[in-house]
Image (cartoon, rainbow, N blue to C red; front, side):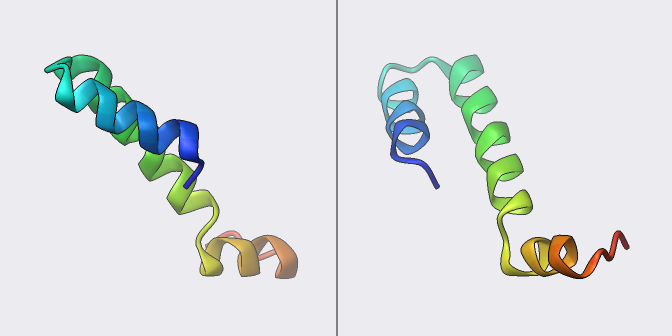
Length: 49
C-alpha cells in the first residue's frame, strides 16, 4: 500500500475524521484488490473471472 495512503488513513483516524477515514479505507481496499497476486496474474494471463 502506498505510504501516502497509509499516512492519510492514520491521520484521519487520529483526527476523528470518520468520513475521510472511510474514504481512505475504501481506496486502500481498491488498491489492494487491484494489486493482489491473483489480480496481477489475471492481468498477465488475460483472465477476467
